[in-house]
Amino acid sequence: MGRRTKTLTYQLATVLAVSLVAGAASAQCAPDTVTVRGDFGQARFAVDVADDPAERGQGLMHVEQMPTMTGMLFVYEAPQTASFWMRNTLIPLDMIFASADGTVQTVHAKAIPLDETPILGGDDIQYVLEINGGLAARLGIAPGAVLQHPSIGPNAALPCGS
Image (cartoon, rainbow, N blue to C red; front, side, top):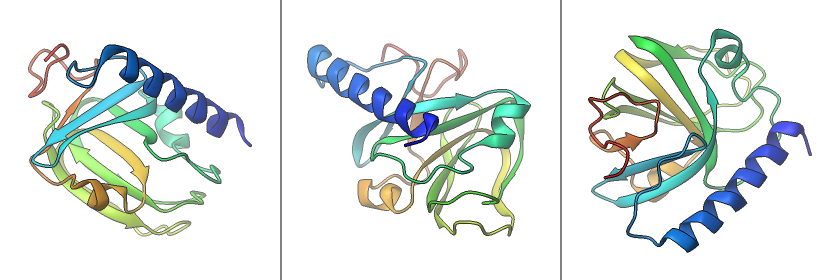
């Protein structure tokens, strides 16, 4: 198992333990957790955060497997046109593109491993959550859902603590 996979597995165990202790009703807001809330309900993901150019460039490349309910949150300094590809990415991914307030704008389902075709997420995107391919549909994550994470600023649609 690679370093990133071990980290994601550890984070998943930590998030599950914290969720059990804190109770389902209270919202978690920690640097290694993204909560997604929408018409489907709520889901929490243990995440690695990619918030600088080197981390964003590496992304989930070379990861051979990723536990369910884990992923990577890409954080940009400002809203921008977002385009991703799957170079050196070995597992199918769902890409959840969100605006500056954390509102999901686009969900790209089941990006094809190793495909270098650009995946356009839209304009004015500041956050991208990558999770296992097919999971967004299984959970019901769709445009209009909101992300909660400490990186999402003071104008967050779902502020920390709510």
